[in-house]
Length: 252
Length: 226
Image (cartoon, rainbow over all chains, first blue to last red; front, top):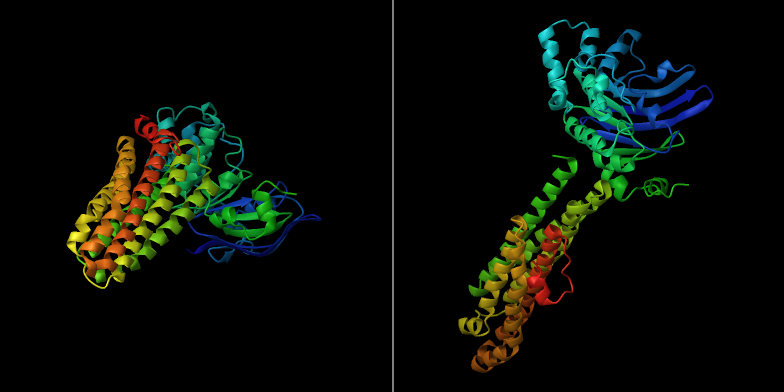
């Protein structure tokens, strides 16, 4: 399996704070990679490297290489950053639908990218709502406000919104932590379905979730990548004692 | 289908494949015995490695499912039952290989009269049917069929109990077949174990589908516990 993303000796500082310490990791294409670790370990910071969201935080300094399909995304022209962010969709912890209809939430990304062909937009909205396993639940109320949906449905709507502009990578920052177990199960099943077409990186505090959904897992601690391996290996026989302590709840 | 569902489906497919391989092994060992086919016996011994590989793979898959999915209720019982069924199947695989080894140890054809008088062929037929029926019970969720193992095992026990006297009679009647008579005795001892393993498998099938634990219960309770 080819590597879609790769970081080589990446260091990131927020001012004086050394948030990522020499992270080298390769993320295979069309797979799910989970990032686990205690709060403040750097996993979300690492996730945000890939769509250059850390750039938006003042006094951030990054060294090392972040490669997407072999190209260093920190060496591209500023004018190409929008294209990068179209290629790298993101889903956040709390569902954040726009104050628009269900249909317009999904169509939004297409419209802001200059697409005006209504029949294309309608097809794309239906296709991505199907992909996000939401179509059957919303097909009769596409004109209704997205806020009328449940939390779990809103999160799947946000995933549909991210998929509509056809990215190749989806970043998920604790996508199910605000949801009930049933909605969480639906999101996890969705992640499992999506990996055949997308490269997915998921940050999660829920280790069982990492086990259920991911092919590879990286364990972060104090800004360092302690261990990265196949999820089966990490959860049955991790190489590092720190990983073992964390996943068995004996941390610290 | 959820991720866990697809993992469980693959696990079931693997255990069923292992089951079929073991049934096949037992069948071939019987044919090797009745036809004194040494090539076939060697094939059975060689194929034992495949049975062992299945055991390792299924054990590893069960370990992964526990570690990654924390199954509960029916899913949990399926994984637990599969692990134990796998272990019993591997032992039946060992028995098939042992019978084939005994065939290879013989220096001449087994006299048909010995095979009939000791009732090893009758025993073999019952053992083969039992293991095949455990697979059908698992596949079709038929716990009634699984429960028939407890009575059928008793028939094997009776043949086994009478085996020593019958083998001694064979030794007296066919002095040129002493070695083979003793080999048949050893095979009978092994085949009796197939009944026990089939019974263990039946208990796991009932545990999986009905959540009932029949281990260490009296035979009448097991048969009547419907």
